[in-house]
Amino acid sequence: MVVGRGEEAVRITTKAVTQPDRRSHNSRDAAQDLAVAAILDRVARRIRADEIERDAMGEDLVDRMVAWGEASFERYQGWTSGRQAARALSDTNRLVGIFQIGRARSGILPPWLAGDLAAVLGPGVTIEAIRRARVDDPRPGAPAYYDAFEAEAMLEAGDPARAYELARRAHDALNPAESLLRARTSAIAAEAARQDDRESDALASYDEAFQIDPGIWVRLDLPVPVRIVSRGGAVADECASLLAGSPRFDIAESGMTIEVDASSGHGRACLTSSTGAVLGCSDLDPEADEASDEFAARLARGLVETAFAPRIDMSQTDAAGLDGSNVTAQGGLRTLLDDDGMLDEP
Image (cartoon, rainbow, N blue to C red):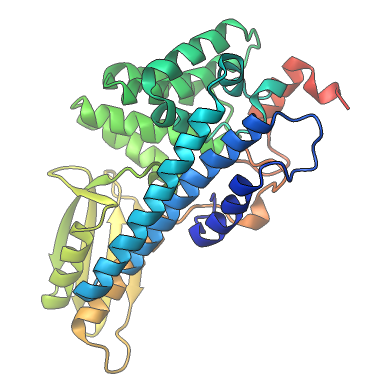
């Protein structure tokens, strides 16, 4: 999921949901394991649906309809996994405990996915569970995590001003090693500021999230506001039209900028931040006998894939316990574990 490989992720999470007990643990809470697997599956299917939609850009009507059906099925399967997670967390102690990252009660839920529970459980239930978890957790590093989780619940509850405040506070307090969660707080802050008509705050947070982890927008299924500038004639205009219809973008008067230039047998489409930083480019030449609309579609798909590609690969990750850093830089989560005495346990 972190490296944006949805098809492979779904294959793994499907097994995890259907066989949540196959983890070689004798003392784990089976319902908690199922909840974690279901949350992972929910997000993996969202990534897969995005891949299907991206690959169908520029295809004919029949192929687009087939892709729409496949993507809708993946999202429905993700919804059912969310319901499984909600049922598994119906016990109050289990629900409160799952937010206490780094403690035995939290199981193996990655902190950068805990925010998904706000949409799965509803904001009211989530906010109350986080409140109880805070009260029962005196560790110095814990408040930043609870702020991050509560920010998403507040956004879900329709309070973007409070969501922005909590997300920014969490981002500033989290250890830099907690990069995936910090990217998520930046994305939540951006969306909250956008909803609250705070344009400059929103743009700063959009830029920040892209610099840390562009894949966060796919995992959260949030579009980013862009204005599109087309240069170079029919191919550029067709590419711009396809990008305008992508679920990854929301056409706005201000925000990021997409510049498409396709002339003289070459095509280039780039996404730039509000400060002019290049966030991703598709730079292609047409293939032999390639139709102009096919070339425009390939250029558009290339930009979407490149702009939202995660800035991490599997060689950089700790497969045993991803926290958004490599194995030598697990500062934030390791501090919490130290504070709770868990690193001293066998």
